Image (cartoon, rainbow, N blue to C red; front, side, top):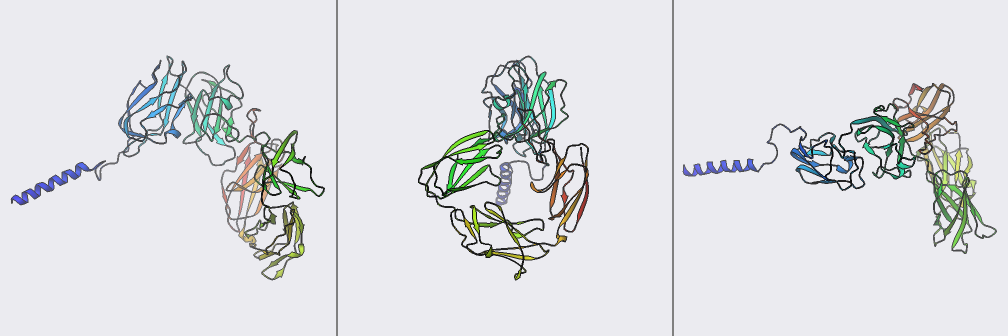
Length: 535
């Protein structure tokens, strides 16, 4: 009996020890879904005549800070960010250490967003904000509005909103150089809200910034602005959306560099207008050169021969409209870029596409006898080989549906600027599809204005088709691959056939882009009949 009593007592003690060792809520207990509650702040929230440099805020449970750098917004912004502690460890309070000199008679807000959450379940305090004033009152006016990226159909988030007071210190270039009087961000939506603003006249901007410093850098950032100023307390709600856009940078030549023997690249920013290169250095009589802009890059390629120029450098004049630059390119011991040929088609050649062959160097001679095009492995096909530009050739032929083709190019078919001939036999195999493998979109375009529009069909931000529409009418896009498409209309205000972006200093908004209300999922042997009303 005594042994059994001891065993029973030991079992109870072991059970109690296990229960005490468990942390968190008991198994099966209700889940904590309540956010932490602020108990007290020292100084109190919405304190006036603030003269201190430290704040402590107490909560009813242990809290942690998550994504503080992304969530915290201090308005007006500090030159030096405040020191928030503790970070990385749970605590029932947070400290705010102000490292800047505060402005007089100014209301400051510390908006923590959703950064403060409880330690156990991660319940967040939504949009927690602490407010103080260095004057004798708390500013309480607000501004609400929305912002969107003009080139994106789906809204994105986390834009910075900047508010500048129109006083004696304001100028048109202040957004490039100075932090604003007030800031906020669109963290969770495309809507923004400034709070605790004082009366006055303001200029408002939105930026999608690469570096979060509340200054506009046109090289990396997008900008949006209102053409009119905002008056508080009258203009507390902004009816029109601000649209973000990338400015076209002013033209500027970058340093030229040698990439291969006989090849130089000139980089630039901004828009090139009839950009030309002229060599100043002495050259032999048989000297020749070719230029071509790199696809999808702000780069001009310059090939030259002969390549055995006995010089350490070459001097150039590069002209672009009214801008003239000089450039010196130092020559190093480089190798020739080996001649290579690539095809624009892989797998399927769509009935509306053209087959292109592209070389990496300028081609000066082609032996057409070394080309052959076959269908179904053995049936010759008549074709026409045409030079598209200095290193690209197009092959035109009458396409048949549901047919396999093989284009064969024998060695020495191409000869480049450096007298190098293609070495290998090239075989390009591709197929065509049946017309029933494609879909069609019939679009009834109804314009409510006189200006023409550019209708674009896109798939995953890739431009697939485009049509220029001057009057209301029905247009069609045939032979579309089965996939999901987005349709948009560009209002061509200046009638130049392209979309023109905006300019901040000129107070010029970008040309409007209006998206069709729904995405169209095109299926094989299927057609859509839709009406696109543009107003």
